Length: 233
Image (cartoon, rainbow, N blue to C red; front, side, top):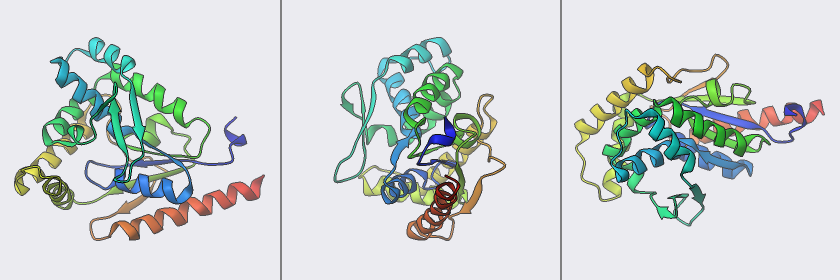
């Protein structure tokens, strides 16, 4: 039962480019928890759809494919690697084109159902950090700790631009910012599981904060909740 878990379920939600992936990995490492990158899972489905030439409007076909895909995460010296059916797609799923397609794929009810089932199975025993856009509202509304991480669209676009350049991917700053704004609009307006802040989430605006500062804030909050749970046993 939920009350028998010794470790917590931590949900991190927020818009694209807010630093969720980086912070969820760092937070999980500091806590000794498992990191589940739900965004990478949706990106992986989008990548697979592109490879197969599938229409993003075919809900049933996308759902069947999502249920059959073998999505795996493997640690490495350079961070977490993402594999789809044995293929390393770590870099491929982060391109601007795939990011925009991901918003459409993530709006597909059958895809969301398939991946939410997998996410719940992976996290049901606690000791996990999950990040995405609806973790605290849809996937785990009963999460022990919920964060809503945000930053201005311009700052998130700048970060994505620098990230792409560091990977050797050609990018334009203003276009990247526009793509972030387009992704925000798509995520907030979609019919199924739109980007919404959970009422009991802790807000952290990282526009003017560094990764280390945000991490320490999150770590302190989770550890305080862990202490409360330990004291209640």
